[in-house]
Length: 316
Image (tube, rainbow, N blue to C red; front, side, top):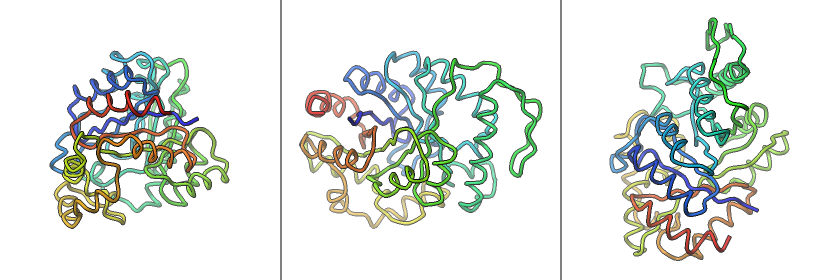
């Protein structure tokens, strides 16, 4: 049976609002929450990007039951993998073992900010592979000296450790990424009903849950929901490699200029019809997802969560 989770969009909400959303989702009966990790928002209308590790500490103290997954962290450039190992260990301890560490190869929008060259995807996969080798070693509590192709680590040891390290799930949108995920992770993370990718992940020996992110826009008025989704997330309807390659929010504003409200209406579930929301969730379940994390586009977190409490969760 597919488990329904709530996705916290860090690009749209303050740290306080994210914590409030986590609490509301737990109270409403969602089984888990996911949270994105960005330095910049995609579009100006989103307007936020708090530090995910600080937010996770607050969520750990404000919730008691829900599992938490990072969706997703790039542990290779903006923050060194040694520091990520310490951050995840602390978050896992605070959450009492409820953390799943979602990873990915990153986006230039967030990762170029320290002046590092943005490498080709093959190099980013190499970096992710090496970074996870470092992180898993440090989760064991052993001291690490490492002189690899991309990272040097000297006399590093993480002293504050949870009872068990987090499970690792990896975001993978192409064949090579899926092969890497099957080798280094404990689960798959996707952003659309990617039946072929999940099947390939399993064929290559990938184990663990498949987790999917589903964007919706709840509002009592469908037309207003479409307008909100268009204002805040229209860039996602442009195909291609832009999401990994463009370095600035203004660039995403420019490429998204051609997306219309009709495009949004045709692509996403917008409005208050519970059957449309349920149909979208079932599409993810049919594709092979074990967990579906539903993200509200726009500011109506409380209204959307209450709608799901009344109209969607009971039907599942």
